[in-house]
Image 1: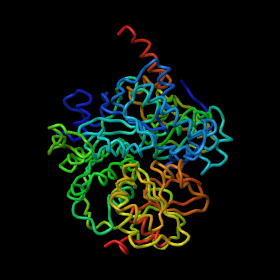
Image 2: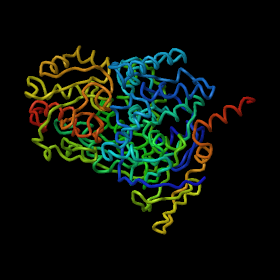
Image 3: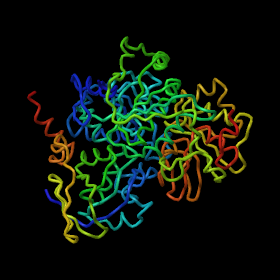
Image 4: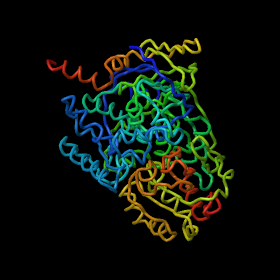
Length: 165
Length: 420
């Protein structure tokens, strides 16, 4: 699995209220997604494209357990998030929803550049800069979920396969 | 040689011992959900697996986010929650009785040594009862509902020792705002264990604040060793504690990643400036910041003890002209108790407006939402940009003492002016 896309860069402590603002939480996912990050980047939701990659600083996704914070990114077309660090609930939510979340403290990129990455090996390439980065490996137990495309497909396989048990 | 958190994870994963960094599969003793992240998000997924809830008696469900319904969308979410509880045979369903983190302990669902999960980041609150309780998202909750299990990376434990007695108008909330500034908010995969004479002296609702805001530290859990105060609270909730309840303690030779010692008597009332709890300093640095609204609410700041703090600052005083003080008691039982002991009368005579019990304005979903340009001081846990309404609003955080004192002056005020 390899992902290549245009990059959006954000800073530290991007919280779940910025990603999925409370006042719109009762709305449908597409409506909620229109407000993703609008408090700090009003053009993001309308300009982000299918296949883009989000790069962020420390503690990406701090705050609430609402998994819409990850789901709106998928809805908008984001195919991977690379951050220096993640808040733990966001990290689990992203992988459970099949959105690769890579921890890479060394990552260097600017909005508009392109990255190519392999979520399984953690290799990230910024060709414009001629730089290669290595993300921290995803724990083995989680790889099975990532490989299945998320927790639900993973469980589906388990439930359909365990009928003889 | 294990910490309390490690002991609980060992028991839940049927192992003799676990070590920090290990990933273990745990059997879940209790799973809590609310209307926002609960049936609305898990019902269809569970059905798509062809699975039923593994054990309906181990589920606690509370409608607290979209309450009371203010439009058709919120009414439909609440209706779906009700239907699902009925269809799945979930008896522990609390429909608009208050915030899940408060309701769950009022009704005696938490006990020392439990391994519990909650579909809300502030589920860490349950650690006040000596349980290991961790917040998870809705897909993860679907997995728990289907299997009764979850994988957990065993966290290192950080021990936070608070010795001594609080000065006047200082509370657990001030400890947590102080710690957010001191330790930062990115302490991932850590359990915070609170100890020391200041913690031992705290009633359960104050210990809940410590564990609640472990979430703001980025922690996986907050926990306090059970003691006689815990047992008394369990008995008051109608629970007959197990005889070994007090055995759930860290070993004397347990290994901690860090231990920090603090002097509670030296702690001043704290205020967090917009837009992060980590922007906390002593209240003196914020004096005279003009305010439009004071909000006392949420799981963090509207339990009975919180209303008592507010009443201590408001008794015989009035909310400043042009200032709004909104109070959303954390549960209907809280409101009833505050009515019975005279607290509610002090609050309303001062000019406070009493709102329905629920998460309310804290998460920008209920009554009290902020307009652009408004400045608020709140007893809640988070002041992220846009959380309580408009991204152009500014929210300060403080203890119920500080929020109430500030309501009287119409500007950020040191509560020690009013509370001896």
